[in-house]
Amino acid sequence: MFKYGSKKYLISKGIDQYFIGVTNAFRFTTLFFKEVFKRPFHLREVINQCFEVGLKSLALISLTGFIVGIVFTKQSRPSLEDFGATSWLPSLIGIAIVKALGPLVTALICAGKVGSGIGAELGSMKVTEQIDAMEVSAINPYKYLVVTRVLATTITIPVLALYCSFVSLYGSYLNVHVTETVSLLSFYQNAFKTISFLDIFTSVAKSIVFGFTIGIVGTYKGFHADQGTRGVGRAANQAVVLAMFLIFIEEVLIVQISNWF
Amino acid sequence: MYRYLTGFNSFKVMEKLKNIIHKEETVISISGLYKSFENLEVLKGIDFNLFRGENVAVLGKSGSGKSVLIKIIVGLLKPDKGNVVVLGKQIAHLHGKELDALRLHIGFSFQNSALYDSMTVYQNLAFPLLMNMKNMSKKEVDNAVHEVLDAVGLKDKNKQMPSDLSGGQRKRIGIARTLILKPKIMLYDEPTAGLDPITSAEIIDLINEVQEKYNTSSVIITHDLTCAKNTANRIAMLHKGKFIKIGNFEEVFAADTDNEHLKGFFNYNFIQ
Image (cartoon, rainbow over all chains, first blue to last red; front, side, top):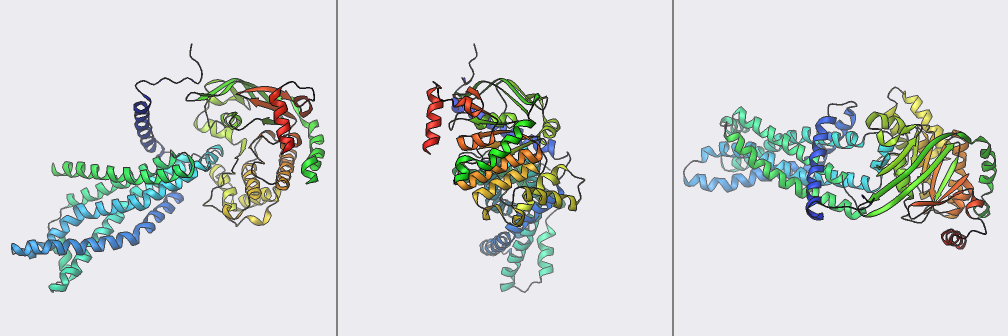
């Protein structure tokens, strides 16, 4: 006879819990696509979150993008000089930054800054029963907290990635300008000469995937935080680590797929 | 302190409230309720009724399953087995909009108040209204917020953040947030836990005033005998996942009771 309270595992507690975790994460993610098209849309909260995500990361992305541009130019110049191909520098920098570095640097910074923030905020709401309070007030916490934040990261991170690419190119231009007389316009024209529409499309698509990943991982970890303040810290930490890990995997996959076209 | 020990204000209100219990109308009906977590059996066959206009205090030690019981009533947890009927609806069979519609009639006051800490007191109170009553004007929302703030005696706190409030004030705002939706049932999870005796007495008075003003039926989860005595028409004693006694205060804690657990609980509270 089934006894209430007894629990049997299919394989072992650890393995069962791993698969339960994967299933829960899958369900959590698929629920987003179900809820995102349902009313109410909480547009004001989405705009608030976009503003939060953008504003929180803008300064850091500007600084990092600028430095990446300068450093990458400085490192590439000697190699190109050896081949007498310094005129290719803007094109090389353009391809590297727009296709790879811009989206990747933006995603990694946002994973650290925004992902951990979302994980900690929702984790804290979870352990202080604020999410339960929402639920008992007949408010769908998934819709209000998860959908809005995931939409915000998915919308904002591609914009930030494009911004980061432009700032990086500007940093690169300043570095080039120290040794050569070149106008900003001609530098940008040269940088974009070898970049096709598909490259920009791939870059934006990649950033959309990264943004979605950061949002969904942060909210998932926050929503499933437990064990008090320790759980909040762990949720924030796991949100960053898992998001970064997934971003690198996605980067490889998207580059592979885009190479087929 | 005297008021805390005797429950003087509350006693008068309680006498009045005894007349408005409608025994023919059950608002919560629970039968054969079981709930466990992993290998821990928390509730082992709970049978319980709450009548309209009645306050029932569920007493029990920490970890006896009191909070689990009200979380099942409001649909935050699913029972393993048993029937939970709230306002005529089987809670386990409700999902989505149906469950939300029922929840609008249930107020849940959390042990730690669970105020949204990124919102001001005003925003905390207006939030459930703005989310659920889309066609309310700003003036109507304002009026509703000020009405409940007045009801809990914190009219001047609407611009403060929850972190600026004392424990008692947070409890009051938590109760106000549930009242704003005009619930038929109030569920209080440890309303006096962590409060000093005077603030506890104020919360006890508030619980009775809420019942009188809003005509609610309440389940009060507590381990505080003073709170139970001064707010409840009936007391249900939960021990090891079962109700060991249900009745009024005098019946449950009768001098000749032979139940060691009841005696121990009474003596512990008396010493406290």
